[in-house]
Length: 295
Image (tube, rainbow, N blue to C red; front, top):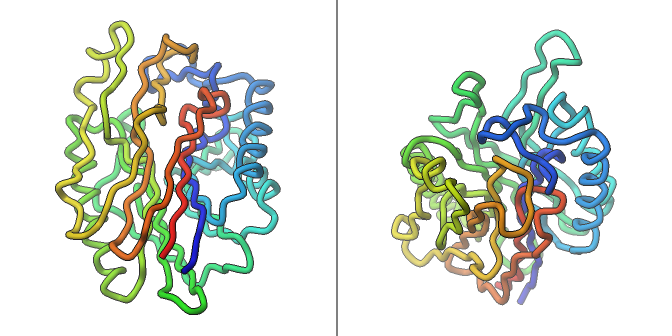
């Protein structure tokens, strides 16, 4: 029997710690945090990842540097924190244009601890994707990293980040159905499958604060457990929220929170433990979720 520890976390491109708010969600700031604060967030992210000692990290919203995070290369900082891990990456959003000062890029990365190695990498692009400010396209996809483990079935680790602000979740459901069709193919091809994600779909109750319910009502959609393939399982925690709204800086009790980050697993995966790390959104607008599995 093999045991693995897996962590999924949306890093908020290094700029979405507790002091951040962003105009995209109705906040005051186009650039969500100061350069000094972002430096602190990135250092905190590095420490959390290093301390977690996971075998596999499925991370969303890593940036190689942009005006939105004062050009901090979060990908490089994460790699420095995980020197014993190999990496596969892909970009959700990229606007290189012709001038560095306009550069904006972020995406997803999967890190696998040696001696495990990534055998193959595949990107499954969804047919429909979100647009920031209804203008700039974000290319939503599933990033698959396959790992061969001696003496047992190979595993496909799937990292994804579904759309967030499509009305009533129609695009998210379309993406989810595409993803389920895709992971069933992986299973049929002989892989055990673990998907870690920012699903952007609620798995419990929203803890609305103030007038937030009217602001976010049209964007809420529940996680569609009924659409999972037969025998597959979804794994979330409900004692600690995984996301806070970014329409204002975070102070406990002043931000709407919810649980939208977690895992789904194919039938041969046995989940022994799952927990959300309560970091009080200090360095990202998401809390990390870690899971221990055996198979």
